[in-house]
Amino acid sequence: MLKVKSIYLESAGNIRVKEVDYPEKKTNEALIKVESLGICGSDIGAYRGVNPLVSYPRIIGHEVVGTIIEGGEGLPDTIRPGDRVIVDPYIYCGNCYPCSIGRTNCCEHLQVIGVHINGGMREIFAHPAKLLHKVPTGIPLAAIPLAEPLTIALHALHRTRLSAGEHVVIMGAGAIGLLAAQAALHYKAIPILIDIVQQRLDYAASIGIKHTINPSSQNGKEIIDQITLGRMAEVVIEASGANIAIKEALAYVSFAGRIALTGWPKAETSLPTNIITLKEIDIRGSRTSAGEFPEALDLIEKGIIAADTIISKTILLEEIPLAIKDLSENPGRYLKINAVVQ
Ligand SMILES: NC(=O)c1ccc[n+]([C@@H]2O[C@H](COP(=O)([O-])OP(=O)(O)OC[C@H]3O[C@@H](n4cnc5c(N)ncnc54)[C@H](O)[C@@H]3O)[C@@H](O)[C@H]2O)c1
Ligand SMILES: [Zn+2]
Ligand SMILES: [Zn+2]
Image 1 (cartoon, helix red, strand yellow):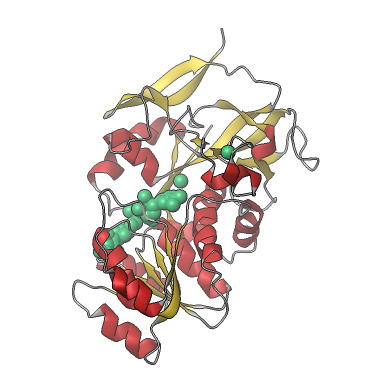
Image 2 (cartoon, helix red, strand yellow; image 1 turned 180 degrees about the vertical axis):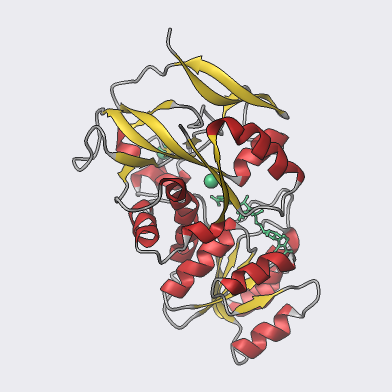
């Protein structure tokens, strides 16, 4: 039997390159030659054993780009063998209540590749053909996987219906927060980015985010009050996952404001719900994405999202286990590491 290289988590903390069977494609799947991959926070979570949704052993990876070797039922008409595609990694059932109203991202039986089932960090990969998006030519290969986290950032902006002229406080200047801030600028909104790591804020400033706040040395509420001339932010995107940041979102948002919760906190957050009533705040969860891939690819193609400024380094498939250990031990060192497959 032909074998292909994969990035394999035998168990939490035990990661290596492993040869696995060449995938057998089902009729509704397309076979893909993988060309580039993104390493995501959730891959690190799987490695560390802190993501309760991950079962082991597991081939990780859900930010996957490649070319079609063979199509399958449901492949969009625009895609032919040889075309470059990005994988929409959220496999939905199509039958449950959220699926029936088009909210496939919160399917009751959602399976995320690399989390619930084996993922795309391998040389050849089979994926539902309907969940593929054609990649425009002209985006550098290593930058394309960034479209996946960008869909998550865009989904949060869409969930809050962010519009031009509004202030949007973004908590967390990680990959998701920085992408959300760049997209907010494109929407002609005014992003205010908050993080406790100064280096990340300095970086954000260097890519054009004018307003940044470090709550460990600055008073966030006062600064937002000044920037918004007393109104506070019409929109807050929580993209840190820190319990304290979720609570602060209630203080930073305006009366009649909207909050999207994208971060995955590891513990419960206690909130003064009287503030939600008092300000009549709309709080919305924001999970993965639904329909945002074409917009994400377009923004990267046009250079509106400067992908190369988010990617700290590009490595080879075989180097992923080491990079994951490095990211796990030094979480602040890199924003995003992507890999190419040779
Ligand atoms: N909803 C989804 O579908 C989805 C998808 C991907 C990631 N996420 C979650 O979104 C969050 C962001 O993802 P990421 O990849 O950018 O993570 P990241 O770890 O790169 O970024 C998080 C940032 O938050 C900052 N932070 C920590 N405490 C803070 C505080 N009190 N105030 C402000 N900032 C603080 C950190 O310094 C870091 O820069 C994570 O919680 C992740 O699990 C959610
Ligand atoms: Zn991801
Ligand atoms: Zn469903």
